[in-house]
Image 1 (cartoon, rainbow, N blue to C red):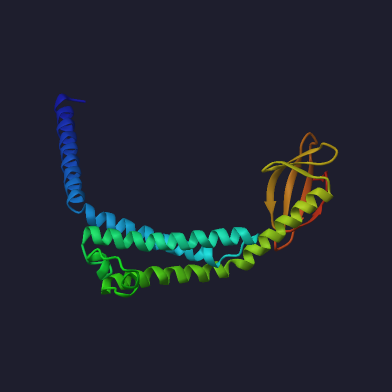
Image 2 (cartoon, helix red, strand yellow; image 1 turned 30 degrees about the vertical axis):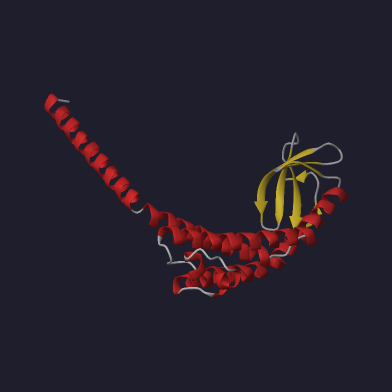
Length: 223
């Protein structure tokens, strides 16, 4: 490559680097000037996401009553934290915009705190509550699927114990004769395992539409 070509490449590269540095400075200055708005947008997005999950945690079913109680307390705390975080951040960034009147004047009376909202504060509250409500519906809709998964897990644990099978890794089983099997294929309605140390031998573990195991073939010739 000639020195002229090399110089042109160096000059072009320098121009690109310089343009990139200038763009980076512009982005930094833009972020610096609008840091309050950026933070409030991040906080509002996090609050909306947290409210959605708070609703899901409230609407879901749980395997034990104490887990359900704990998760619903977590849901309430999460929803309250999301609401309070947006209110406080809104007051800091734009005083009086997103807060009830008494917070803006630092009186903090309980009754006024929950009843005297300006328009923006009411919109924030209704938005978080509405998203949490949708989350509750999603949690309720997932109950049957979660229950089926628990029933399948309980049944499958009983099935493996009944057939003398032990899960030694995520993809490996061992039977009561100490024969090992490695998962090779997931087929419609069954799992195909390779019988370790037995050439051409496979084992088939079938399951129904709910995920419950229905039969175990043991080591048999590959189909």
